[in-house]
Image 1 (tube, rainbow, N blue to C red):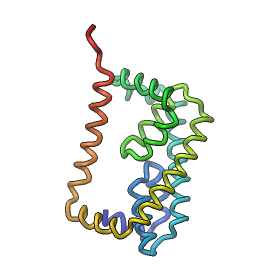
Image 2 (cartoon, rainbow, N blue to C red):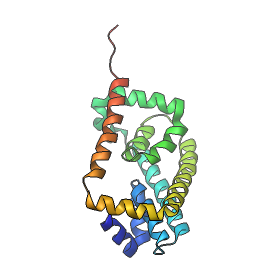
Image 3 (spheres, rainbow, N blue to C red):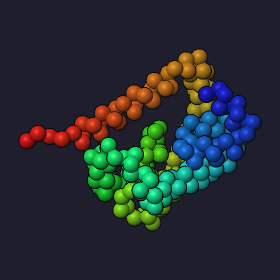
Image 4 (cartoon, rainbow, N blue to C red):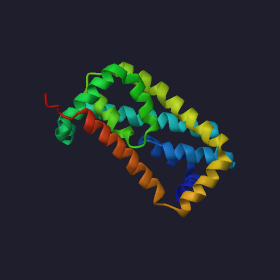
Length: 188
């Protein structure tokens, strides 16, 4: 985290844009913290993060929509999970697009999976744009407002670098268990 903070203060907006293409949660939080410290402009950071996050999701959506033959082999052993995801998209598509922005690791998979379905492109574009702005504003403002607390947390994780991967592994494990349980064949 400390390395990211020093890089962001040096190359700030470029790193924020590139990192936000693939997710950006850590980068927008770090940018909010750096804005709190007076190193970056918060409004500019939130605009850059929202635009990059929107573009990244649209690229992934189009990859899923127009490169199905290249992507489907990676989902081959997960057909039941993909079928469940398609049902969830039809039922709760807009909510899933919003929530996935806040769950680390799902940012890449969800737009690809939505692209593989028959989800409407215009609807995805509009919802993705709105969700990208809300995501950027909420995390940017929250991290700016909690600047002092976040500086203390960053120093703690700097001393315990194993904690973040451990927490992410637990979160991914919980998500994997849910999908495994929800898609398990039932004997009748």
